Length: 149
Image 1: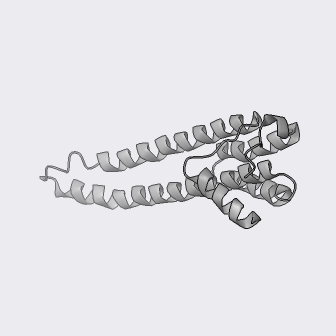
Image 2 (image 1 turned 180 degrees about the vertical axis):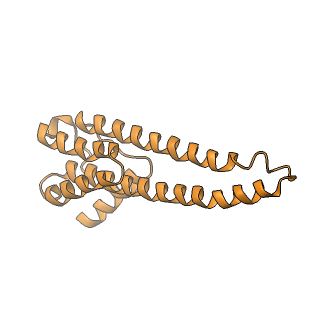
């Protein structure tokens, strides 16, 4: 990645496209389509937009996978809740409902975090900053450097 890439070297259209790539995290599940289209159309035109869009794609796929894992955990927790609830005299029967509720809190809390972090990324990209998601950004940057050499 070009270390000299800064707000001065990106034009407004590049910043808007980069920000849009991240902002679509506000629309979970279907929002990943826009960064895919942006990356596919801009990968040869702007290194900045390509990097930001690729980050947004990976980030949103992680968000989708995390959501499905969370929902599977929730679905699987319901039979556990019913089983412990049926035991009646078991000390877990009164608190059996807590496990599914905790999973839902994690799902919605995690979802709120993912959306907020994507919003921060959109603002940073709009400002032309070199935003990198934790772990994802470094990995994508290394991958892009390998592909360029």
